[in-house]
Length: 345
Ligand code: KG4
Ligand code: ZN
Image (tube, rainbow, N blue to C red; front, side, top):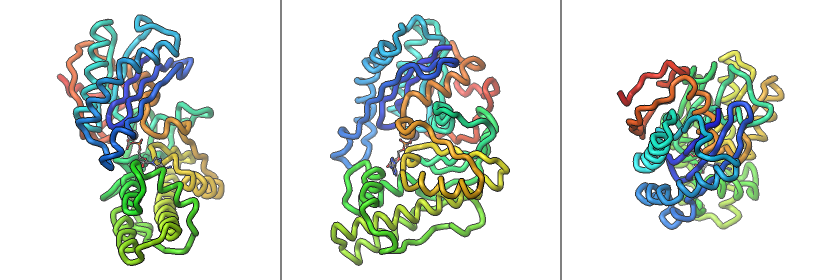
C-alpha cells in the first residue's frame, strides 16, 4: 500500500511517500526556522501562510523523487492534531482535496502517534511492546506501547515540556531560536559541575516531570552572575546535565515498572547527543535496548505521518472528505486501527 503523508502542525512542512512493504520511498521537508527567527518563536498566522505556499510544490517534488504519480497512491494521511489550528487546516484541506479528486481514502493522524511510531522507520525496528519517551517542544510523556493505538500514559510533565524548557533556557542565555540545538551545542563547550541546578521531581516516586523550576533556577543564576560567554556555556551545561539526568532516570524507571526491555525515544529532544550518551550507558547496565528514529526523523517530518497513516489506513480510511482538525488531542484517546470513534460524524 502506497501512502502519501503530509505534516503541517507547526513550523515544518513535511511530505513523504511510504510503502507498507518497501518502506520509505521519498520525503521532503521545508523548515520555517528562518521565517520565525526574527520573532523568537513560531508566529501561527505566518506558519499557516507558509505551509499554504510550500505544500503543493513539496508534494510534486516528493512524488517525482519517489518516481510515482498521484494515480498510484492507495491513500493519503495528514496530521489532524495536536498543533496550531490554522497550520493543521492547510494539511487537512490539501489532503482531503487531493483524496476527493482521486477517490482515495484519507486519514487524520495524531502527530504524537507519528513521533511514537517513528522508530519503526529505523533498522532494526523495535518490536512491541515497548516504553516510549516522547520529548518534543510541546510534550513530555512516558507511554507504554503494546501495539498501534494501544497506549497507556505512565507519566508526563506537570508544566513545561522538555523541548520548551530547552528553548526558554536558551533564550535566557541569549541564544537564537530554535533554542534546543543551540543550547546543546553551547553546553558541549561548558565545564561540567561548575554550577549545580536542581533535578525537579527526580525522587517524586512517580514517573511525572517538571521543568519550569529548572528554567527559573537558570533565570536566577543569570541575574546573579551576569555571566560571561564562558560562564554561559557552563550554565548551559548545568541545565542540560540536570534535564538529561531526570529524563533518563524516569525513562529507565518506566521501563523497569512496565516489565518491558525496550525503550523508544522520539520527538525533537531525542536528537540531543548528551541524552543519547547517558541513555546508552544506563540501558547497557539495565539490559534494556534503546531505539531511535533516524536522526532526521526525530524532529517534525512527513515520513512519520505517512508511516502512522499507512498502519491505520487499511482499517479506517474515510471517503466522506468531511474534515476537522484537533489542536488539542490527548494521545491516550487513541484506539487501535479500526476501533477509532469517528469524531467528524
Ligand atoms: O518534535 P519537534 O520537532 O516538534 C514538536 O512537535 O514540538 O521538537 C522540537 C523541539 C524544540 O523544542 C527543540 O528545541 C528541541 O525539540 N530540540 C532539541 C534538540 N533538537 C531539537 N532539544 C535539545 N537538544 C537538541 N539537540
Ligand atoms: Zn513534533
